[in-house]
Image (cartoon, rainbow, N blue to C red):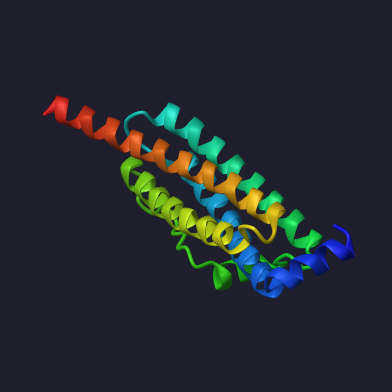
Length: 168
């Protein structure tokens, strides 16, 4: 991104605040990637093969979100968070290790994380709306995908619950 473009954006909003928001989101995306990836590998229970496959897809989408955020941070003359140790310090969404491998427990953890991510990207989209069209577009795209992830997880939890109810 050209220096002039960054200067125009600086006139419209606090770029340092935006860079902080993007680095928080970047930290959360790395943690979300790992949470999905490791959860997919560990889950046990009904619908495991299909859920595992989709969780790995979600993990790859979280990694793509991280790529988009890093690129934008650099375009805005910022520095992306450089140390994995800082991810936990910056992230406001909790990403807990899947110590309970039962599929419902892992899905509920991921659902909580997705809802936090939805709030994060809504915040970034609201902050950049009408001021930084590129970041707004990125935040809106990621928000749409996070909403799809939330729906996927809710659907799996509903399906598993219905399977349990039919068995009882």
